Image (cartoon, rainbow, N blue to C red; front, side):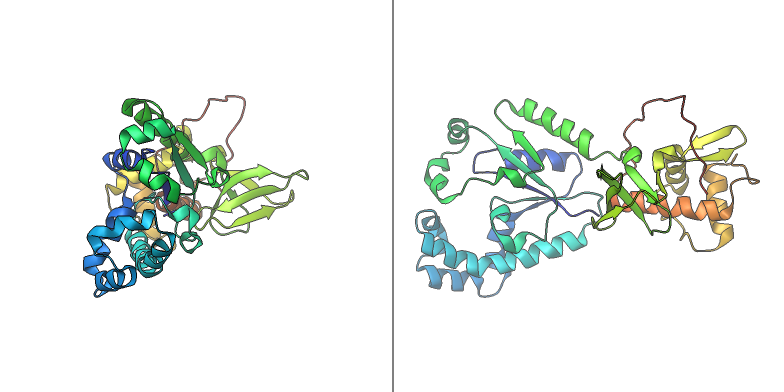
Length: 319
């Protein structure tokens, strides 16, 4: 799974509504505020330590929004537990993409390694005040979000329906797998996501598995997965269709290991693509395709961006 996407924004901006909608779409979302409150009862001695350090009962923690010293003491006690809880939740996720909702993670360096991309939810102050009466009280204690660190900025200045439409568009634009931007590089293990071309035509890409960036010079043999097809008795079958056929044939079961038994690998392809051309599509090709399938499922998704038809281009074969 890619690192979770951080959903952040000031109080009243609507980040909780964004999280709620994402959950309705099947995405796992970690609620930092809810979990922080739960830790007071789940972590032995934490509540007592906080009350002693701040000199107020838990019911009076609202004082931190007007007292910086108390807020910093609270953070020093609670945030290490929250970070551990967050990391544990992330490690337990197996969905292609998860989210973390947090108002503070972006401004606290301790949380930097937990999330990847950032969705910043914004709204005009007047609307935020109308949505949440606590905005006026807490606004002074919240530093403005660093917009330069946001990968996506969601302007939540209209209706809930409009907000949902914006989220759907973002999901469509960023969550679907675009095989024209997924590349295989000869001699390199795993798949990469194309980012850009440098001035000397080197390819800048990041590993699908861990996001590590690499520059491949112009001599590297780079192939986009959208340009790959396999031979069948009826012609050629695009890799996207092969992946979907494999997924259907597996029917929810785990794919066999690409380096496993030849018979198991061939049996899967015989079920998924029964008319594959055995004279030109070998077990070695199947293993490579199966490796790619497993990586796409684990680090991206089988919800593909539709390719534009281009009859002038002929797809190279998997080798």
